[in-house]
Amino acid sequence: MLLAIDIGNTNTVLGLFRDRELVHHWRIATRRDGTADEYGILLKNLFEVVGIPRSAVTSVIIASVVPPIQPVFEELASSYFQVTPIVVGPGIRTGVPILYDNPREVGADRIVNAVAAYETYGGPTIVVDFGTATTFDAISSKGEYLGGVIAPGVGISAEALFERAAKLPRVEIVRPKIVIGKNTVGSIQAGLFYGYLGLVDGIVRRMVKEMERQPEVIGTGGLAHLILPESETVSRIDSLLSLKGLQILFDRNR
Image (cartoon, rainbow, N blue to C red; front, side):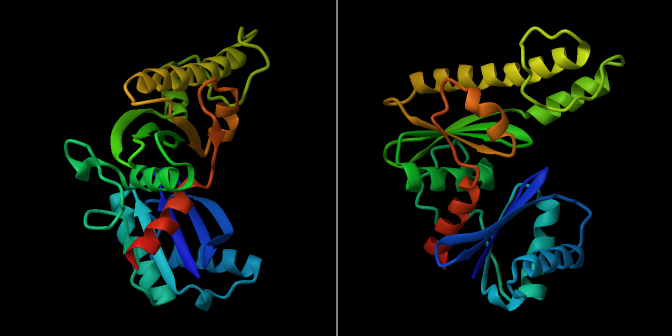
């Protein structure tokens, strides 16, 4: 089986593939001070819950946007699964020409999303990923990575508001029933939810004007299911896009 690991700044997404079928997946908190042994014990427990022995994992692929923790997961693959992992980065075969000024600047998560979006839905495509940052990535009809947009994530904005405004409380990010808030919490929730909804639709519309024709717009990431169903521009949500991309890249590089 293939263990796919997508390491983000806030969450790490894990997926187990049997051939090309995703049979189990988990989302765990990314701990920058975690050790290979700690993550190994966590994975062992997750595997036991679904009745899969550790020995069933014969391959590992890793994508990371957190450089300090990448070696921890590489050590995990070596010591717990006795395999050398494939790591998404310079030199890996993606099948996606990257038309960035400096292709090395494109994060592994954005490459993985681009690969999965084009392979699954064709092109042109825009991927909106609600992670620690909210990213927008454009893929052409030829499967070229054209570039994109990076904005602060909704979680970062909520936390910054709490930290920098002395009288404003920390709030849960939810869809408010009304836009015009009747109290401070409701007002903040409306600002976060509808503010990011407007950000998504506004940026996507401007990106579409610069693309060859109308793209399909795919939403993904931890908060996609909360905010993007209200979007006027996102046509579908695929929360497993990054894991699909890792499986595709594994096939292209093994």
